[in-house]
Length: 55
Image 1 (tube, rainbow, N blue to C red):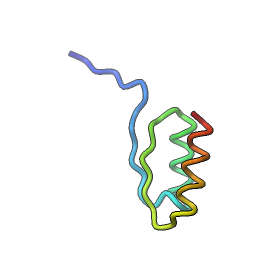
Image 2: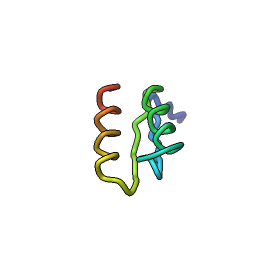
Image 3: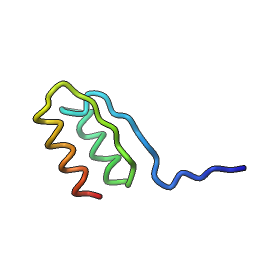
């Protein structure tokens, strides 16, 4: 049986800054479900808000 993933799930480490943040946003724009980790709580909350706005 073939499984088709319509919304891939990605884990982005270091997602609160730099390349990690850009990567999380890029996957979010493409419709992926994004799991983020990072060391900055405030930046992480802002990123989550942006990703949720994208849908």
